[in-house]
Image (tube, rainbow, N blue to C red; front, side):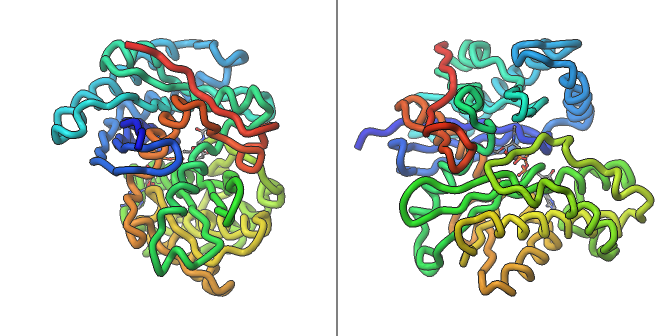
Length: 374
Ligand SMILES: Nc1ncnc2c1ncn2[C@@H]1O[C@H](COP(=O)(O)OP(=O)(O)OP(=O)(O)O)[C@@H](O)[C@H]1O
Ligand SMILES: CC(=O)N[C@H]1[C@@H]2OC[C@@H](O2)[C@@H](O)[C@@H]1O[C@H](C)C(=O)O
């Protein structure tokens, strides 16, 4: 069977670092999973990326690089190059010769209504530094075809759904939820393209809250939230946002939701309330799916916050559905997005669609990504 071996690189909206994964795929299924790795950004660099989100608000055309954004793009790319080099050194011999790298870059601006999405990441520089062909800028072609430019992970979630074994294979329909900085959902029908959209804030508000009020980057294990309670009026104000009433396709910029509605809360009540908002936002998405799911598979860092998963489970169980985390289904929930970018790179190299009218609103299924040779 013809397949390609690809490394996927994801630096997500949580801005916590670079996730790397390697796999072999024929463009339809994953033939073999390889190892994965994470490289954390230091606090100072994370703050520089946060500052870049502000600088990026001045971008009009997506190639604009106001302020220090050109320098940041180079620095982000060089950090990815070093991460790839360390990853390759750690890999067993059979994974040493990847055909491709799928490079997400760092999103600094996402304005789907204006047709602009900007990921800092210089594909040609990464190809030069690593000696490996790089597929990058995978969101742009979708937008050029009328799509939101996000989410892109649904094609991969659909492939994972096809590979589920019992008892989960029988629990249909299944949805994958990626609880990253922002959360997104993929509904996988028996036949045809997946249905997907961003569902709301995942961890980003919790991270910003505990960082500002508690001086820690995230609420590890939900311990801060465990000391507090849900402040219903605040949760309700967040959930009254018209975004939740809209059906998909829809996607979010990291800054579309802010801490403004949580001001004045005590640290632990804020962390607990925002975790509740994350879970409820995901549950609200059921109204916009073709049918209520029977199985929820939770990926992304938010699956490690027991309040998000617990509230999601409580809501899903009322509707007769089961909630599991990726590992319950034999998947690697930390590596899912990096794996997705490896998988999408293979599909791009084979000219296959990355997105569908039902996942991003593009006019027809479209491929995407630019290719840079070393
Ligand atoms: N042990 C933990 N306990 C609670 N939360 C955690 C834990 N580990 C990670 N997280 C949360 O997960 C976040 C990172 O998640 P992830 O890597 O899925 O996000 P991302 O890829 O940056 O986001 P996106 O999917 O939006 O691009 C962290 O910022 C933190 O909020
Ligand atoms: C523009 C952008 O980078 N969006 C991210 C973000 O983080 C989660 C959510 O919002 C999702 O739409 C997307 O990433 C995932 C990996 C995606 O495209 O599928």
